[in-house]
Each structure stands twice: as C-alpha cells, then as structure tokens.
Length: 198
Image 1 (cartoon, rainbow, N blue to C red):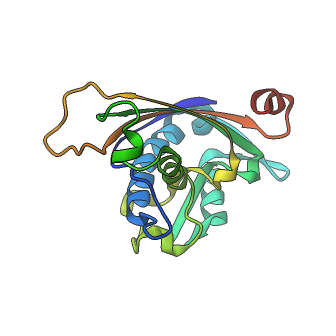
Image 2 (cartoon, one colour):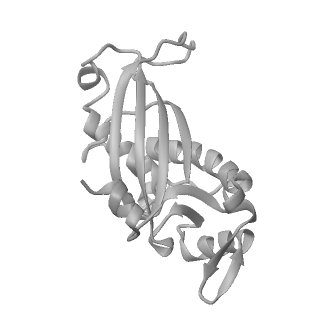
Image 3 (tube, rainbow, N blue to C red):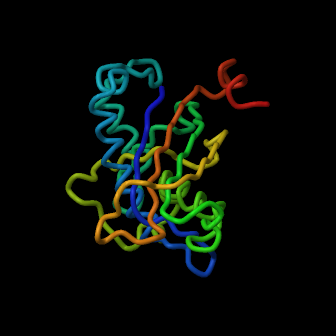
C-alpha cells in the first residue's frame, strides 16, 4: 500500500532537555485525522477482511481488536504498521521550509533531531508522559497512528527544499511543510527483502 501524509506547522529539534512532548502529540493528532480517512476510504481497510487467528475479521472488528490490544493511558490506538501484521514501511519525506539551503541547522535545529521528532509523532506513545496530559477527544476513539514503533521504519529518504507558497500571517520561519510518502510491505517476504535491504 502507498499513500501520502501531509503536515504543515512547527517541527523543532527535540532534545533530552526539551523533548517537545506537546508538539509531538499535536503532530500525532494531525496524522490521526488523515489516517482515519484512510481507514474509512481505502478499499482494503474499509471492505477487506484480515485473517486474525482462524477466522477473517471485518475491518470494524479489526479496529476494535487493535484498539483493545493497543489500549493505554485512556487511549485506544490503532497502528497501521505493526508487528501483529508483520508489516514494515519506508518513508520518503519532502521537507519544505522558508529558510535557505543549509539554514535548517541554524534556525530550526539539526535535521536528524527534527526527523526524530517526526518519527515519534508517527508512532504510538510509549508511555503516558508522551501524551502531554491529554485525554482523547470524541473523534479520537480509536486513535489512528501510522506506527506501533518507529523500529518498523526500515528505510528513510529525506529531501529538503524551499517552501515558495505565500506565508500565512501566523506562520513562523521555522514552520515546515512535509509531504510524506508511506510505502508498506509485509516483513519477511521477498518484496521486503528486495525493497529494504541493500
């Protein structure tokens, strides 16, 4: 399966002294909205059945089962890429920004730590502290996320470039526009070997 996730807004570098927990969860919520539409409209997820144990499980039951399985801190998470399905993914990230080439290190933090923040926002929280003290909203049960764990990202490509659209009044110089192409693959298959190993 291939699809794109979009994000526009803050993407700072996280650090041990400032893990930017609230920022991560705000980004996670943006991806939840897009992934909920994917689950509702993508034919395989919407109408297909997935073998769970010895019987096929319709998607609604599948979401409930995943929500129960990945329940924590008052949330019921539904990760698309998870060990339960033996699914991994690759990410092709286009990071557009206002500042010029090379300025990503000076003005917004180094690219490695900004991408790491993004990875944390794409996955389920590992503990209640990563939820910034929030409880799920009415439209966040279940809460859709891309990854059970970021170890399931097996290949990443990042391209940075200028963001040329006119800035909005509330936009900050450090804001970014991300286009993330996600490609899922069954781990352990020949396609997995070919796609993710050099």
